[in-house]
Image (cartoon, rainbow, N blue to C red; front, top):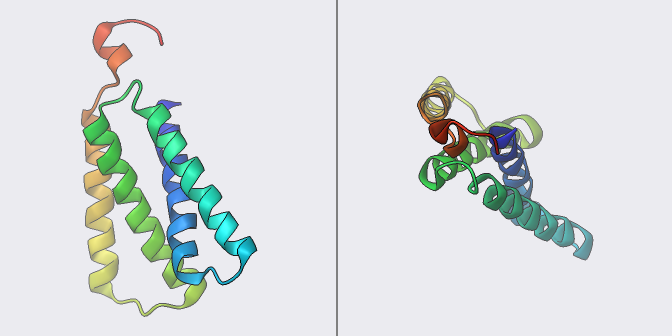
Length: 112
């Protein structure tokens, strides 16, 4: 559940980052602002029980990969094997960080 907050925060990050580039009306700028608010709210909630450094690294890594992939799929950005390979390396690092990080309740042996 706690890591789910980080993943959901990263999804909202992708929304607002794309919004920064493509927003062109009050409605789309409002959506971008809402994405920022939700993204950081979820990020802050996750840091209550997970290490902030790891949470932030996972958040930015997923957000970066998600933004690049969204730009490729939705806006037809050029793509090549080097770009895909580097996204894969980034995701391997993010998954690795998540796997080696325990939340604070696991370290203390209690329930949240």
